[in-house]
Image 1 (cartoon, rainbow, N blue to C red):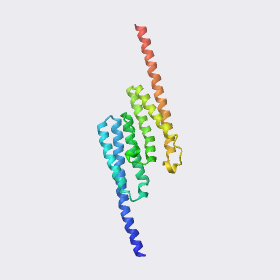
Image 2: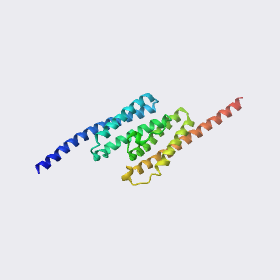
Image 3: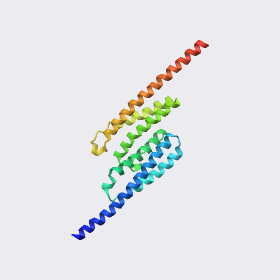
Image 4: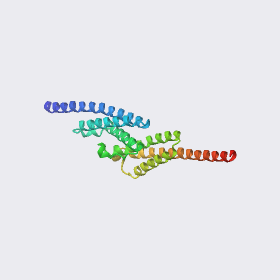
Length: 207
């Protein structure tokens, strides 16, 4: 019995060390992804690119580290960190008009990728609000179309939450974000048209 217990103890000790390292890497990965998204919104694209390169290296190291422990790979903290990596990569690509990164290229599970795609729609709303403040409404319509496309894809993924990682909840969030953003942009477009009409009227009166 002691031989069996020692074997199990040795396994658990090794697994515990891997878990601790995975948690450390996941926190670093999430921090780099958050900073990459922040840099993207500030149009600091070179900085964002560097952060994403580091994030990809961290993600690869984290995934490689749990290769022998499927339960640690599928643990919430591991998949959440990979979801954040997908979100940051997708947000950067969409805002900079680059091709959407493939989940296999990112090394991210499909469920984490789709949830990251949904979270990226929330970042696009933030981008649209910035655009509205700058008066770039035509660009705002283009970004809204991206959000619409994201929702259009997510709503077709009709599988149990156990497979999709709770995607239905993310899809519901995207629908709400999309509706609010559409309303904000529509209001801004109407205000812009009204201002143009008033300027035209003033020019005719003063002309």
